[in-house]
Length: 403
Image 1: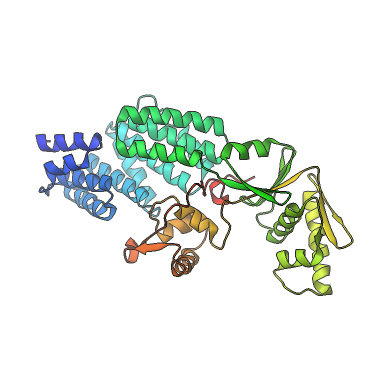
Image 2: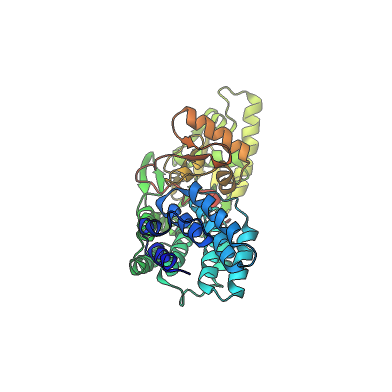
């Protein structure tokens, strides 16, 4: 490796992409292409960065497996930054195995953290925890130690273990300062901002107020009956009943909870549960059936009683936990609100739905000027400015473990 390549690599390690480009911008050999690609990624030109890293991998050839493996890892990191979650996971795993076989433990660990961060982004928390316990961060350089703590904090925030999350973020801040990489420091600051932003709304007795994550944790530990409209569950007394697959029952539970301690008329319940403006005796009969099912589902936690004009939820204290912003395609907007650019395939993967459904939703949001697209074909990305002051994705169903 010549002196210019060495100097460019050191500049990139220190977070100085312009300094690296000053040394290798006019070179087309394989090491220079790889370094140029990483520099462009640090500068935010992810499409050009991806193309350069691919060229570098081809230029290295089969006789340099370690260099090719490092290019695969770099390409995966660029894809993650571009929110392109469809990149080949098997190729990254093979690259990690190659790096481990050649004794490059640091880059192998980096590959593993990329896999973990992808799984965290799409909400597979159990898999993330299984992979994380296999990694010992102690011998790793500060940048990877910071990445490790960011993952720990991300899991803890989504598990609503707020004290653990704050401790992890403090450690991440320390290691990021030690690494002295501006982009890493910015990532830690962004995570801390999300941590300290309202993550939900509390609806109780006709009043609404925002809730911080630690307040949500306290609410779940209280004796209140919580109708959780973020994860479609009803919680209380250390138990929870999932109604995610029973939307009619959850709609009834929420309407009754928002009206508590008052009752709700049959006409209002029919309108919310069945989405009908007018009702007849058949709808009233169906409502009685669904109320019976709701009563049976909630029996360990609360009761539903009939009143003269409708039904009422019976419990010592009832509140509703709602998303910060509720509108059509709110979950989609919540992911886009992180300020990053997403592909429709990545959004479909994160939301657990079809790509075509996501594309239709994005098109309708674009007509309403709520999102914007750039690029064409497979390079097309969608984004929107963050909704100010809200940690919108932390309590979404797709990001949390099942009950």
